[in-house]
Length: 122
Image (tube, rainbow, N blue to C red; front, side):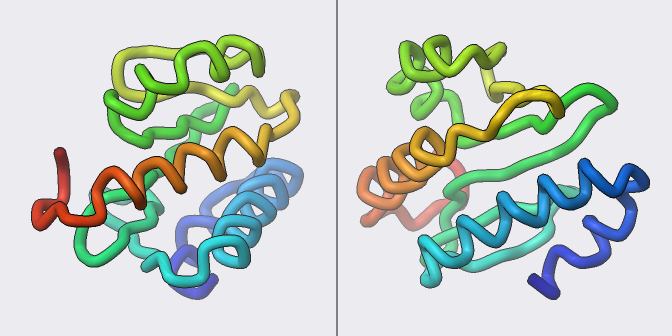
């Protein structure tokens, strides 16, 4: 988790920091082959040099950005989970539970879909 420690240390609210730590820990344990890195001041996970999923935080939510293709593919699941979606991300309110199955499915989709990709972005 060291790659994300500076990011986590900037989260003033201890509950929010704990929620982000739990999310990062879950992904790291479930997908140990993913690389943890900070790019554009955002924590993200990549695989063989290609973007898999990224996160940012705001006053009211966690922004989850797996790329628009993934958001379109999982549109119904995002809606069913009760999350708000924009073109490039969806939002998990700090008061919401994290749907780890949805996050896992998105990561698995991106790993498979981008297995032969040589660029960072689609």
